[in-house]
View 1 (cartoon, rainbow, N blue to C red):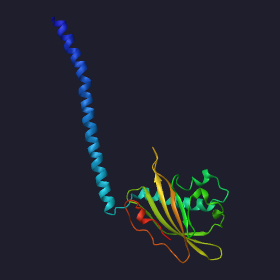
View 2 (spheres, rainbow, N blue to C red; view 1 turned 180 degrees about the horizontal axis):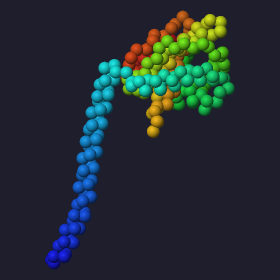
View 3 (cartoon, rainbow, N blue to C red; view 1 turned 30 degrees about the horizontal axis):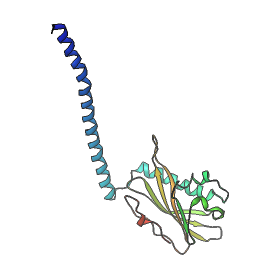
View 4 (cartoon, rainbow, N blue to C red; view 1 turned 90 degrees about the vertical axis):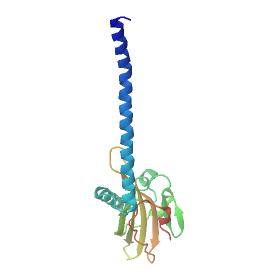
Length: 196
């Protein structure tokens, strides 16, 4: 084999081998990155279970949106369209419950035709996992009658934006049955559900 052919063959092998080395480095980088991400996720989970609250920006956004959602809920009427209800309640498996039983928010109908009460928030907690929140509101009507609302919220992360919050479940308690204020928690557990 001539000198020129040997150089050409060597260059060919180098050209073929170069992408493999690059791919190997990329693979090693991906594995290392995944390991770091897994360690960070484990540390966040451990902190969450230890009672570390959600970061302040997450809590502030959830608080603002929860307040707006409660106002929007009392703006709904028996003739509200499903798209209006879906701006307040999370799609799929949201619930509304009172002493008569559980109803899908889209089937509330005339139950929504009430005068807007004066709302006072008694408690509001965002989960350590930053994905759910819980709160209790006191609703007082013009005649002084009181109703309590135990509400669970769920946040849906945006692709390039913070979470958008919606009501996941709402339980309406009579005035003489104030629900217990929620405590700090990490992940929502169905055992925590409001019960009448």
